[in-house]
Image (cartoon, rainbow, N blue to C red; front, side, top):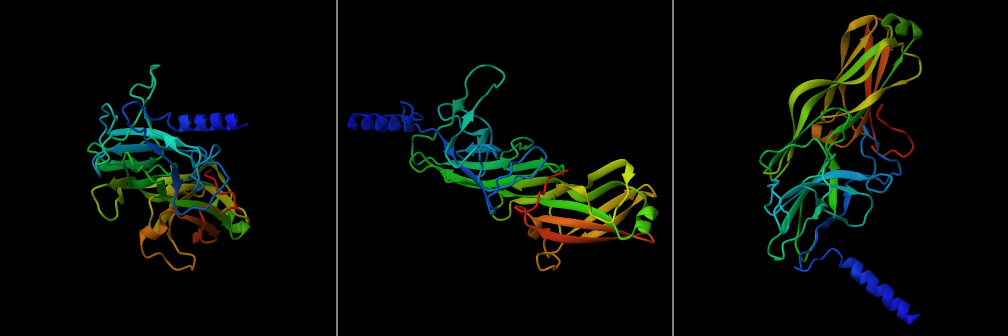
Length: 327
């Protein structure tokens, strides 16, 4: 019995050392979570926000993770023996350590190489994380951008530091956009007939997100053109009913006010409705930063005489009692 225990112990030690090569370099590993979010068991699928704070096999976090030996500068020039600096992708499926690999040619059959800490403990390695894993661009390694499409959740894990003897702490990803869900209904059936069927609903947003790693304070900004992101489209038109109809949802740049444009069969030119965002106390937001990482439900009410009223309700992103999925 004692011999079996010794064998098991030796196997555990060998496994833990399997990522250490003969030169003494240690392979770089990370764990990750999503900041300020409640745990959810629902999986994130294509086109939806990432729900939850703990990655799992059913709710993986697939991110673009950048490593460098220069703080705030993340160029891509992998070089032996550490293969740093490097931009790679990592998939986190739990709280355990995930090791960082780099494949310079995924189309061939050559194995990926493992990123390593420099052997000198005086040489730190820096790391940032970007979600989703694709769509990010940077020419100088300092200014990073991604298009805001309405269908993608964008997250950022700020810079952390690790060394050969003191490994990286957990990465913490934070949501950068605002999730808006839109519903509509008619106050009376006569109002519904006057307006006709709803053919299209759009919401205003900036079209690009930028991260400036040179900034010591707020690194994230929302720039570019003002665009209309489509949340609902039906060529034949959907007649508003007396009960609420879900028109879809969108992930857009944070703001204190959005403009929603509605087109109907009897008003093909469309009508624009300004929507003021409010907090849980129903007070108007004073800064767009208050809308970051939050879910707002906008309800549109069709009334007679060419009137549409809009209300906005702040909700919890991880509400366990309601299925809030992109449509």
